[in-house]
Length: 599
Ligand code: ACM
Image 1 (cartoon, rainbow, N blue to C red):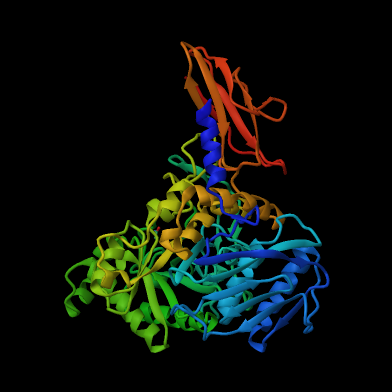
Image 2 (cartoon, rainbow, N blue to C red; image 1 turned 90 degrees about the horizontal axis):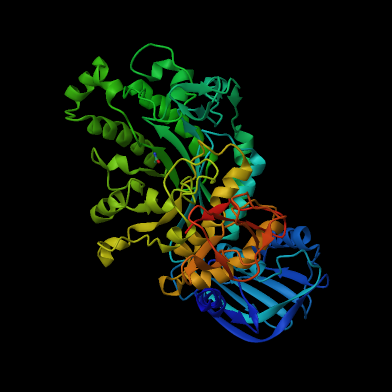
């Protein structure tokens, strides 16, 4: 029995304590020092701020009002205040995102750049209770913090399924809470074009609508749901989201796929393909073989699209896709054959590279940078292109060794559409297996890179493809709690990584998610069996969520709240055919998947 106690004790021993309280800051800060005393938070708190901190002060003020019904005053008071100060001088690192947070008995001072202070606010919010109290204490401490990587990304595929403006904003809020700063917005694909382009209205009139959607994984024989599906963001909504993100230090990287993953655009303007046929917006998952034709007219069409896109998104980067381009469509095209002769292009990878390079020149001419999936390396890429390494880490390594910047998003560690367990009860997911432990283990800088080349690794990003995610709740299920592990990978110093310490800190974040009305995946219980004698076993049940209640059955029936409630390891005789089934249920009634164990 000792074994189970050791497992539980490990969790508690490794959590950090502040004045007897466990702190739960995620991602873990670079430097922190605990002090005596507490700051009392109540309605008499004042927020004072430098002019440059106006947006930050509004953010903090409305968060406190919404979550805690604390309504700070915005006046200067000698005592009991939170000060947001612009101070970039006292910065020990090169990071523009560093901050100091100093909590004493009568004041909280957060200083740094506008971005730094925003992150200091996020840390402060995580020191607050995860229940909506009106008055509470925060322990005195001093924190100096800065990120390990500049690129801390989350992607969302809004083509396969469309997500409302309200949800995109919530997604940005969820990112900001964990100091994630790059929102890669996948806006176009074979299954839907989701951004208004004023010069080409059919992109949304036709390209944003599909006749129906495949039902789950019914590829062969194909079964469609017979329900028309549509949705797009107009330019006004995009501007609104861009400014919402900016106030949360999140830069949006819009992705306009080319020359593959473009069937929705081709359905709207068939002249974008090499043959004059008619095409539909795809209703099935997978990659269309129909791609853009690399003619001057098509390239100009896409430059025109990008002009509108670049005017909407103030960030540096424009993502042009570039992945999974099938050459089949080009093989029989006279235009492509002529182009290959004229430009001396030997392979279809070089044809793609020709397309991408023409587009990149245009992007650069507007003062922006191009980023694309790692296939853009295959036909040769310019020195200025940034590479998103998704087919493993090889693309990132090749890019860095050539002196191209890279963002690491290898499927094995960063695809949040992958399943979180191998259990058949897991809700539908695309495949793969990516539990939170594995996300936490990820190291974005490949060990083969020299120190010199490692500098080209900008950071890492999780991708959330939505073929099987139709609702916000499903997206939240896929990102929580895995985003927390990723945030620690990309923000915290490598030396502070400690899985059990992280698990300890994660506990109050389950309550934060309740407070913030976010769905999450309730970690499933693990049933541990330890043989005593013959068929006699000791059974222990535990999970990564310590406040959950576990219920179990030993007769094969599905466990629920009327089943036996687990309180401590117990002895049981188990027959060969017998199964123990368990479920975790949170205080708010959320349920984990059911797990089972036989001997
Ligand atoms: C990708 O997952 N096709 C970039």
